[in-house]
Length: 140
Image (cartoon, rainbow, N blue to C red; front, side, top):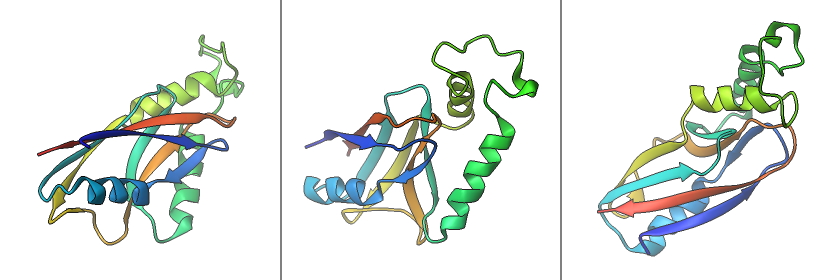
């Protein structure tokens, strides 16, 4: 079981934690030492390792990215050409370009080597709900 794909449902912009699913995959693999690579197969969302204890962190990250890259309907974004799928389309691609679509996490003693307050998140950048495919791959 070196690889699996998760399908995560989103409800719009925000951070969606899937640490437990990743932990379960690693535990069921039986691998003691190695590397988990997490890859999202989309261009308008991304991945983060972030604090999972205080929900205010998610709120502040969402607010920061909305301020950093507002919808293309905002006057500051009038330069945007790609609006095929709506005013959140190109801003979602920009946010994904600023973050990452792949992350790696070491495995030691059969467990993810995450810090005490770290969780793995899908960062949805689109306004409407989506189903996102996330590949989990283990390497020795």
